[in-house]
Amino acid sequence: AQKITQTQPGMFVQEKEAVTLDCTYDTSDQSYGLFWYKQPSSGEMIFLIYQGSYDEQNATEGRYSLNFQKARKSANLVISASQLGDSAMYFCAMREGRDGGFKTIFGAGTRLFVKA
Amino acid sequence: DTEVTQTPKHLVMGMTNKKSLKCEQHMGHRAMYWYKQKAKKPPELMFVYSYEKLSINESVPSRFSPECPNSSLLNLHLHALQPEDSALYLCASSQASRSTDTQYFGPGTRLTVL
Image (cartoon, rainbow over all chains, first blue to last red; front, side, top):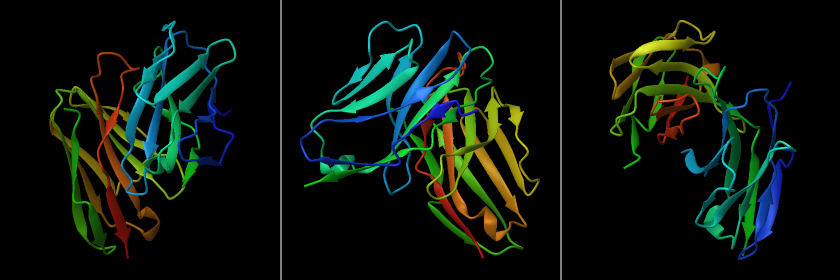
């Protein structure tokens, strides 16, 4: 079964607008971490934001925020004031605490296109 | 400083060649990883070293051989590769204080096997 699901293969957003990238996850572990990475065409995986399963507040990092809804098992990424440089592939990922064994589970990714 | 460096950036090799990919991190992390990523797919974990010991050995072909000389360095030795091994190879590191630590990735090596 898919542990990380990203249902949007591609998304378009107008420059300066906000966009939400969806991510749902599945785990029976109480302790886990949720991550978003950005991968431009150059290939580097850039860490954007982290949410721990016990964190009560939604994580924010500059223009990035993570909308964490634990009961719904969703961890959507919100990018505010989109810029042309935000065009990239975005991966949602999870690391499980008890049985994770240092593995990271990635979703299939969402490709974001920012239009001028 | 969250830098993970990888060399070379690009590598083209024949099926009979032997080459190595190198990765270095200066963050004091104790876990390092090799991933393989095919185009338009998420990364797939190949190897994990935590505290310089191989912790997870996926069913990766023996033509890939990892080496961890110390906690800052990670090599991937390549021998007798196949064209389907052409991919982006990503190195990453994490603190390893807990399994949910953030991984930081290097820029990757684009490998082409002819």
